[in-house]
Image (cartoon, rainbow, N blue to C red; front, side):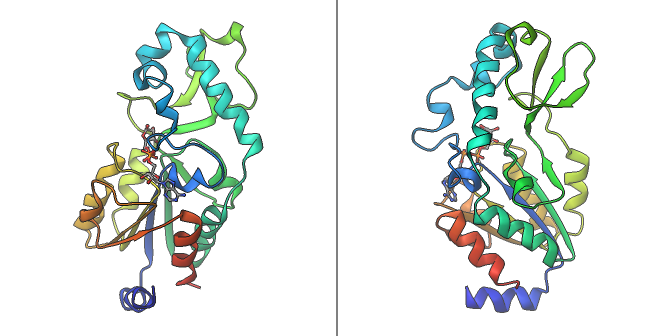
Length: 233
Ligand code: APR
């Protein structure tokens, strides 16, 4: 990491964009999607993460998200979450984009989190389209007219304008804890490269897109993300 410290000092990175995925919350006890024993292992994705699946069986989908929402009460931010909230305070411009729907970045101190795939703690009314902050379980009598404010497969991501703007002057792009399986998030590295940003992947293991990054660091997020942020202190 020492040579990286020199490189970062040379580049004098001022405009940092970070993308996180399920891997940053794994050590807090939240299952990832595609690791062994992951969330998708027990369910057909199209059944619980698509509009068609919801309309076919709203009760099953609500029960899946009720369980994930309830779990938030038993998990806590880990040092990787808090390190990113420190980095936000250190650098001039910082944008945190997350694919995660948990609230651990906010509880870890991050201020402005772009939940591009939605949030477990929000639901929206199918009649009015109104989004409300929500904790607890959606009850069976509500199953047919509210849905989790989660972006499902085939739906447009949230904050696309803010995300596009974030890359306009990006000089450092960090991709943390994601398998880079899902677009458009997996394609963000291309947007960063077009701005000649230094692109760094921090993940437990290599991914299909690791070769697109200038540097790769492998290990548990609580170790490699904290070590990386320490370079800025
Ligand atoms: N530290 C760092 N990385 C980790 C850790 C850890 N402790 N544990 C797992 N990982 C890595 C895995 O190696 C994997 O590359 O996190 C990644 C998790 O990948 P996925 O399970 O595919 O999750 P993610 O990339 O966030 O999925 C993206 O897909 O299903 C959709 O909408 C869902 O937002 C999700 C999107």
